[in-house]
Image 1 (cartoon, rainbow, N blue to C red):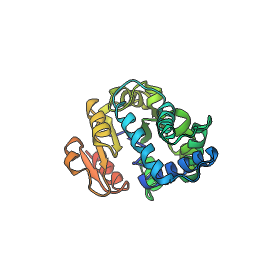
Image 2 (image 1 turned 135 degrees about the vertical axis):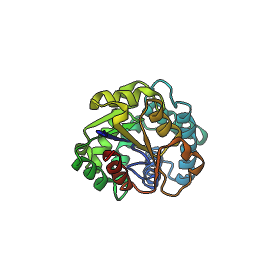
Image 3 (image 1 turned 180 degrees about the vertical axis):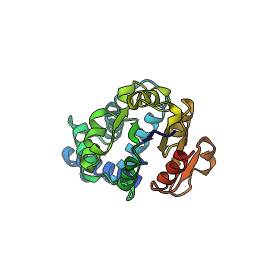
Image 4 (image 1 turned 30 degrees about the vertical axis):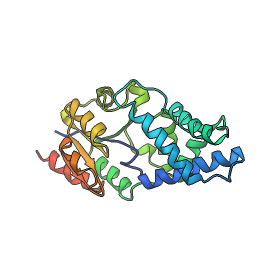
Length: 236
């Protein structure tokens, strides 16, 4: 019997478009602080994204290191090319911009509330630093909706390593077969859930990850569709 539903965060509850705006504003603020507003912030944002994405991909399944350190190093690499210094409070700037510009999918809250009305444990399993996820969830007004939040910092490993998933299950007091995991990354979310015996749902709004659907048990284009999947599983 299904007793819990866990979700990824970035790309699953908050939109990629909102993340892009957030990161662009981080770069703009860094340039303002450095007195280099003459530089094209969009171009530097693209370079920053490329650096941070490449570094983060290397961490998949590996022991946890602070995401703040990864992001700061990515920004320093870009800054070094253009001869300016990254502010010492870069991480505080980053969190503030996430709080200000984060954008939930329009059906996120109704989905969470519908699952809770079914009596399910609703949690998050995310590759994140604890201070970031807590501040972001509170700014979005959804922190208190979750029964648990499990991060890579808590688990000591990044997805798809099994430890984040197993720790979340332990906290919820449920077995893997009694839970469902929802995410937007087939390689990390679906594979990670599968490795511990937890069925998974892929959120793929535009069908761009079709070649990787085989890693996942279900595929949806909107979060609200998860509720119907859950109801069907609860009836079995």
